[in-house]
Image 1 (cartoon, one colour):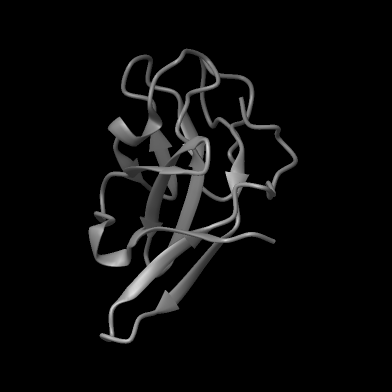
Image 2 (cartoon, rainbow, N blue to C red; image 1 turned 90 degrees about the horizontal axis):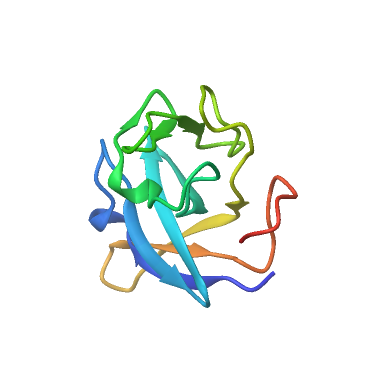
Length: 116
């Protein structure tokens, strides 16, 4: 696996996703409790950034049409989206200053979906 630093954990808000670019992919980083998730930042229904939607109940909402995607699996939980989005492995690593950084591996997907 090839993990790259994406952001500081402190930069990821509780109720929305953070847009980052890792290698050649735009990624939405989201939190649910103590867990951190990374999904391709592109709705599978329309070319809309998922990072612009709200995060709630371990899902992120596409603000344009209202589809929600499970942060764990990338699967849509409601129409109009019917196809999942790619999900990526995440590692949290402490820094020398005592903060925590988020690292993401975009060379591997957790759900087998090939990033667009």
